[in-house]
Length: 169
Image 1 (cartoon, rainbow, N blue to C red):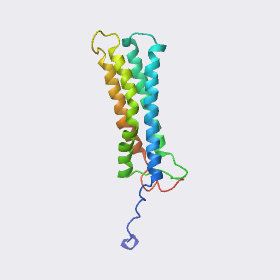
Image 2 (tube, one colour; image 1 turned 180 degrees about the horizontal axis):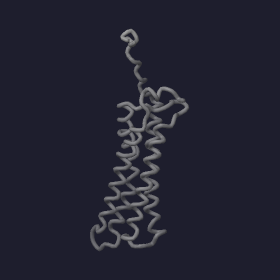
Image 3 (spheres, rainbow, N blue to C red; image 1 turned 180 degrees about the vertical axis):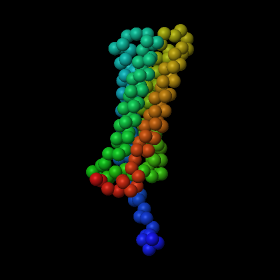
Image 4 (tube, one colour; image 1 turned 30 degrees about the horizontal axis):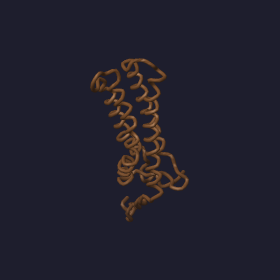
């Protein structure tokens, strides 16, 4: 039994290269930008298409935000596992996960600001002075958390382990 144990240490996974990091940041950033752009478009167009008071529209806004979030999280899972012709599969490692959060937050988070402006306007809708619909701002915070934390987290968790990421098959 002891004679069959390997004496050499296990081969280490290759360090991430620039192409790998570019692919990683590009995929997560694309998902986050599309997520926030879609929700901003919905929130801008929704009151025009569905001309009802805020109280009637808000539950539908929550539903649309939840559905869009589920689609973005599913997309993040698929994108993390999809192979690239040049790079192969992205592998799960501490540097890859750190890059997923750090770089994509810096690059993509400003895309949530137009939605903040729209939701701030919604919070003032029908009010005399000050905000009377704080739930619109709470919705923006929830959307921000999904885009900043959950999408990269699902992407990072969905990455292949080092052993399965070595080949393109």
